[in-house]
Image (cartoon, rainbow, N blue to C red; front, side, top):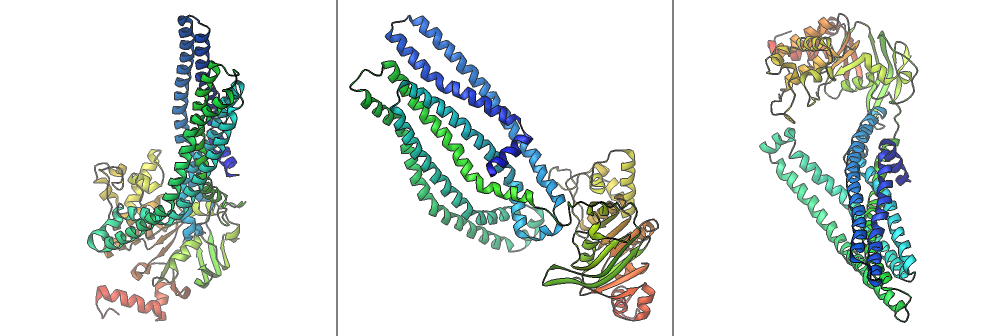
Length: 588
């Protein structure tokens, strides 16, 4: 089944591969038969005492045909390599696009991450390898059959030896392929550990801890343990595969001598076979041995690859409950979001939010505060519909989130997260999250950078907004500090022009003065946008139109800053405690 799926996918993306394989098969049949015909012709010409010049002219013609075919086969091999690269490029994108149709919650599953990583690293190659090897099996099989028919035309008896040895050789090769597949499965967990250690010792983020601590000793111990297990698996399988390999080689090299032995036996008492026939059969037996070797290689690849191809195809079949569904609604303007009696847990036994009631109206400046782990960031993920509530309801403009397209929702509701992902492209592209295409785009980038307070820093760089972030690919790239990265994220949020924008701890890496400036900018921006900002620094909440205080997944207080201060509850104590750190213990 997976063979046909692979063939269908490869041929749909690169139909030229089928044409190449047809050409290779037809020309391969010709070039396999020519040596047999040439030897037969030379010997017959010698027996009939033909002029040497006539023999040479015919041989030159055969040689010219072989040379021409070889050139064509060389060109098709180059084209086949190009097809492989193009297929890899196209189908890799298919896996990236798949991410837009599967739910965010899938990324909480280590098995999904393992399979998706395998599919990106190996899946596309395995699909192409299976399809291509399957076509090669057909190609080599047809070529072998053509040589076999040529042998039958000369003497049928030798076919018994060739077919018998070929069947034995195929069975041995299948056994070797199955052993290699079992070994690969057994080694995979340990290979993943080795790959993980490779990443830790090459990624710059990990190297800081490695250089200043003893974590490298532990990683090296883990690496040694994984390699020791790989060695154990090698010992377990190497002797068996080597033994079967010896048997396969013996069978392969025996095709020619056993064929000749059988041929000599069946013709020793008769003149049924001419010298020319005998000579051409020896060439045919040699050719057959070579073709069988060529046939076994793709057969072994098919057997090795079949189990691995299941992973990418199973991944492509995955469907999300939230993403990719058919929604008929349209959202053009943000008016209101309401959360009613909402419960949510990442797992059934891990409830994060409990009976949350929450409302945001157009033009609001909402602050969400609370201790770490209180459920603040989880609210953001629910508002973006990365997850759906377990119980209760979320609605936008009076329509349930369950009937709302996540894609359309995220055009008007966006977020800037605390952990900023910076991409190895230009600063301008990091702000827009796409390539600038007009003067208006460049003006928007400048406005966004000014809004976040990063404009002067960027313009002081030699390449300005065209400076590439990171030195992953360019030595002239810029490394941003934590605070600069957060400013860039804020600029990114501004540039996306969301109607409701959520800032999740957007200033945690900024000093108090820089933070105050950023929040003043947010308030200024809030004149024509709706803003939700999440922070554990309560000084940022003073000018919010409403504050929600979360504790252990519940809203325990809500109101304006003045209302909550007068209440004298948890918010009051938290605010006074934080302010005292800057203004002294007698602040209140």
